[in-house]
Length: 334
Image (cartoon, rainbow, N blue to C red):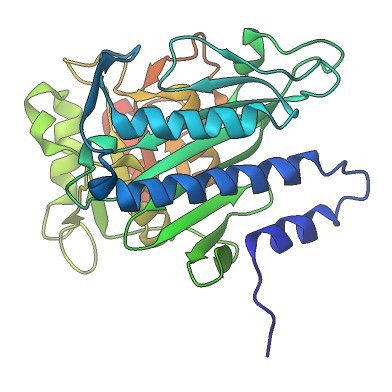
């Protein structure tokens, strides 16, 4: 019988491929996976533990803060802030950068995360999730500063996400492929279920909030309409699938192909999603899986955040669909 490949065993096996590795990044990924387990349990038991509803406060984005948003944020901040490896943390739920107790010699990394993506769906049995990305400090001889987050996505050293739904998954990449794990509740461990995930070159599913159609540019409308034509694929029109939970829609797109899009529009001229801890980590994952991710004309991984809560558009998925978007909407096949 082949031994079960758990996440921690897989991470440490990958580390042994790099003899000069200090093991710090491996420890961080294992710590993040522990945080994901804790949040997964909170989500699963929220209904009878009184964790539904709102705190009465609003976050930096003007969104009402849910109880679970706050709880998930506190779990990750406490767990990762005390690890000694992170100089600074950025969370969707905090107005400013979070300092840790790490000295400049200890904290060689900075972390940005969305603790509970899709939390507005809590109570409706719709999947939610956690998204994160890790950067190395620009200068390891000094303490971490806010500017350490102002790096392109090509500098990400690790990124990943979890989905809390019918199963709890953990998908991550350190720049050598994308690997997926599923939480086995019988042993309390994530088990490898998807080694080296590759997005199909072309898919048959599109995912977009068509409630925003009235605010779209005419070329965006043209692109979406092109997906609905009877000859859009060999099998006919694309199938529309939109959950309204970014991690859930992204996870399906990664595994089945097609395209997820949240373009700029008249209401959101800068985009709706957050560049640093939503768009950039997911773009990193998609590209590692052979897909593409753009904000419209440009590759998301080449963008440099000027603010930790900067917004962006995101069009991501199979190369065929993303290239078609760029061609129709921006007249480019770059």
